[in-house]
Length: 329
Image 1 (cartoon, rainbow, N blue to C red):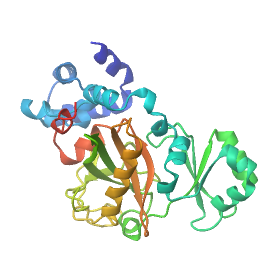
Image 2: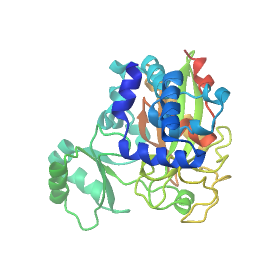
Image 3: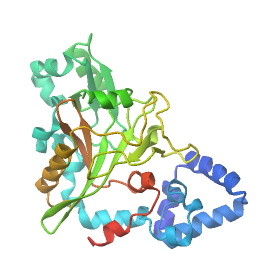
């Protein structure tokens, strides 16, 4: 009941009723029966009200539903794997960049740093691609981010904007690999690679390519899609799937026309080596979702997530993956 109350309070109303109406029509079910199904599923499988829709429980049978790791399970799993007292490096982008500076692959500075050192600020805002990313260091899920064209922008203007908008971090915009640019040029398309520490070693649990669609960020919540990646080969192994359940699967990118399945991610071996090295450097957090960017030269770390999510992980493969985690508990 405690979980259910939390789920009700945290449910985004507009999105909930959009999905509710869609499933009601799709299943030709009454509102009362659909409400009953949503709430019973929430209690029975410890899933949020939104999980019922986002994990497509309305299409699953009993056996399939039991295999999904919902919000409640993931909260408890990550609480055990990543104790709150050790999450600071992953929750604070500035601490993250300080710790993983050698793997970050980009120039960056805090508001305090560039206020004291105008030359550092000049290095970040000048030169190709004449773009910078302004961030709030403790923001999540693509929020608290602004991409700024910097070609005709002065250091004083950047400082003024950061103070006005509450940004405390500035980074040089990352130019992604040419192949990823051809796939989708509107945003930096990152790969979420999930690692698990166990018995002193690193296991890569899953990898998902996030692809933007006319958006300057690649998060699913911004109307984009994600596709599964074969861990061994670094090849996209299935179609893209939107976070929005009303949209069909994506076999061809709707803007660029590039085929999704079969897309080869460059520098894949180096990517896996990099996240494994990163995981071992923070052993107190045992289960991390790394956001990785691929440039023409190498793979680089964008950020790490202790609460790496149940939707982006399970939705692209259209099956519950709870069993993959139970062996680590």
